[in-house]
Length: 460
Image 1 (cartoon, rainbow, N blue to C red):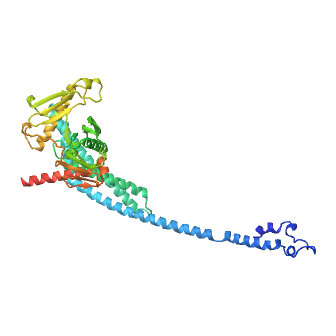
Image 2: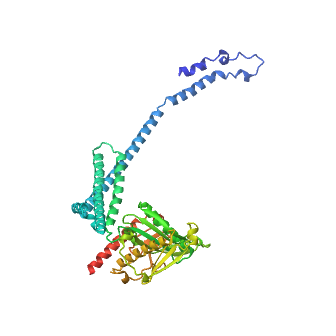
Image 3: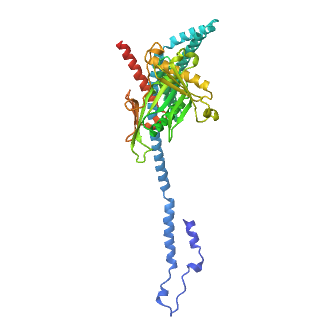
């Protein structure tokens, strides 16, 4: 304080010395104006108050408040982390029970015995004498190996998650990184378990094959063509998310917007089994973007699904007189060849009326071979559905993309809802569905199909 005040008291004496007495002729006002000496006490008070403010314990109080707030935040964070840990432990316990149940129902020991037997057959010197039988054995061997690998991987992942939970319980502090790792393991494990359970519901003769999806615009004009294009994107996105090899092999564009028809090939294990339930008419309700008044419009598109079968696996003989084959120009991309030469092939099976068309190849012969292969696959599927022993016993089974035939409704206006008419499964997250999130609908349909088959067998 003395250091602060010393400069003021050390001012020159002429500044702080009172003025000399006024001469007698000066006014009384000038005699009563010695104002400088009272200035020093005033400044001293000001500096004292300032120094007391600097020397007060306010920073200490502020630090104490901040420390208390930090302690409260840390306590709250620990509480949330512990809550997450308790939830994670429940999820791990549920997933562990689910893994044990699946491994028990799958019969792991029996699978290992089958694997040993199949490997002995494959090692036999006469294994390739019957090529068709050898292919079947190798396919069965691959299936058993895949199933055993899945079951082993399930056990490994759940053991890792259980180890993290036990380690966290033994630690004095909770490691958020370990909890995130365990949560990620359980999330991926549950997805894998869901997929494995779905494959157990697939028991058809072609369920393990790839798929061919045909989309055709139905009633609704330009809106229907735009709707067909939206469905095309939905199935392509689904295939990409499943990591299947997906390609659009044929697409016929609409006059104003959208597409008239399209064909998608999806190559991957169980692609046909998953997509077989998509066969039927899909209905959309929305405010039409092609209507100047923005009126609500209902449109339809038909979807057909066939297995993607190799030619050598289809032991089907179709009499030539039962086929009606026509040729036309393919149009579109491909240069002058497809525009000047009639390379597009259309084949109709006269007894059933089933028709296929192929335009993606550059030669007429290649298109004819591929169209005939698709026709055989389509007839095989229809025969299997109708339990017909021969191709000649089946009847036409064309999808009619019109009112009253829909299997699923997609409502964009006046509310948002996707509902499967067959299973009753529904969701309001229509954006995710159109982006390829079809797992819930596929799963509900497969369960519905399985329950229907059980009811039919019980009735018989």
